[in-house]
Image (cartoon, rainbow, N blue to C red; front, side, top):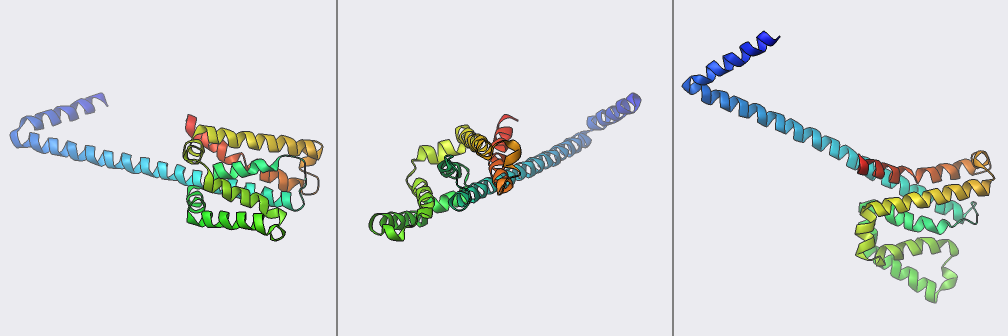
Length: 210
């Protein structure tokens, strides 16, 4: 094997010593380097795109899980835990496409209608609209520091993780233990919804420290 390698290198060196052969050899090496660079960029792009798609998908999953828990809380999951924490969780985990859309003109109009109904027509503003209304107001009026720096940084991920931990331990306590939280009526769906809250922040932390 060593003899073969030395012979190949000797052959390339002898070929390079000839006038036109040296130029052709340089062009061949440059072409091989350009092909290797293109492959490297392609693989890096594919890996980056996969991770970006995975993060966006998990954001959708976590946001919908939080919305699902809010719906349960307003229907048949009445507890004393602070489910209002799901509002900042949705704010921090909402995918960028939906966040920008709701923070724009559409969200401003919805927030204005919600405020007008709440102030002047309270009888037409049901209780179950208070949480969605608060979310829209938060999306619209949040300063840029929270809407960009906190949301896109490690601090936002840690806040999401802490909210998930709090809701999980409160749910287990309210159910009378870990086993009951998966066996009581509606316990399984509630527990799965809370567990899904952990998927996005854990994924972001893994990507951060890899």
